Image 1: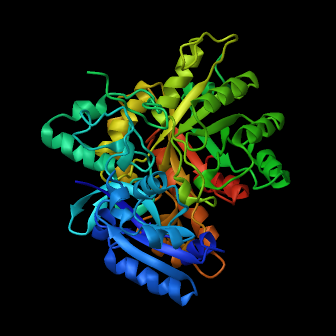
Image 2: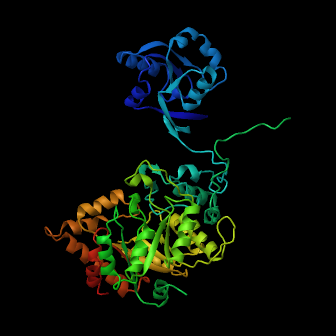
Image 3: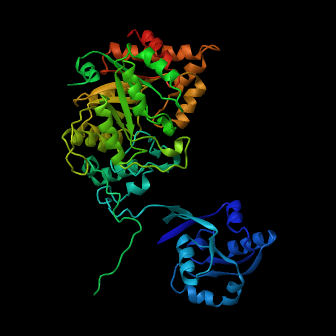
Length: 217
Length: 295
């Protein structure tokens, strides 16, 4: 199950964004940000206390079940009056949720969180970014492990010269994916895949912004 | 017409290269002094390209200075900061200006440098950059379009012979050779017995290999490099030897260590030469060469 991984914005950034906006309605999300404890009910309540202490008026707060869902508009309609009274919505969901609410309510929105990556829980409480939707998937040749995402430099002919003891040059807590790919391909008896020279990648697999339309039946 | 450096590589002599780093700014006084000091002593000198992701005067500009000063130069080109358009353009310019030795590098991570928020490019990697050079030499660009006017290069790459694990590094090494690398300047070697084993494997390839030697200037500097410089791993026994030097004698000890390693590589004909890196201490390269008996 993919999850949107977020991190609370620095306090002074939120202050700057809320400068001059004194009546605020806070919205959390019951899915990803509840799981990562960045925008669930406890975090929303803590934010209410934080803002009140700073002299803001919190007109109300709620946690929508799935902020990025089309039904969010309906859920929020129960809070119509409190939302109307607010200058802005401070949203503690990922940016998918913030943009959804912005489109649905046409009200000013301020994200309280930065969306870091779309990831997967690989161990309890540990989330990793394993795919960045490059549109040119090569994991069939790398043992099912993505180097475009998991190599800091996005190399398709790896490793680089900075790897050491299977770790990435930028952070010893991060694995060198090319060492992992090597190990996996060796287990599979498919090192020939790693030996194959990969041509320069198509970096415009789906030129931003991505768009997909189902063909007419 | 092969470059002077290529001729040196083919001649069978013990090739010596070094590197000069351009300044952070436009005051090239010290840089030009280093060029003057080294140009008649080494077979070629590399000009680094935002080494360790620290913004500096560009390698290409530095190379023009080396040429103007009468030196044989190797352009270092990383893939960290420029996409394939910019890289090809710089290659056209370089060849046109007579800068025809190129060392192709992927490049250190942006995070290690002094502009940590910058965008990383890595549109190409080192092996793809080597292939790009060969494609340009055949008269086309990476888009498949005909070029008006020819280019010609002597292209090389790096390898980290002390990488652990080594096998993935060797797979990449072979790709670089297939992509057209004519010479290799290695990352710093310290364990010469291990290096000999690496050379036993590497000898099968038609590529000239220059062993990388980094001057140690102090024990703290060695520890700093281990922590911060990608691809450099100074072993504890050398750090201890540096620490054992009497006060004020650390650099002398560093020169002694570098000299003795080069001497052994030369005497035992381990490889085709050495690449001496004296970062921030370029003026000591002649002393290292003297200590090694190769000046």
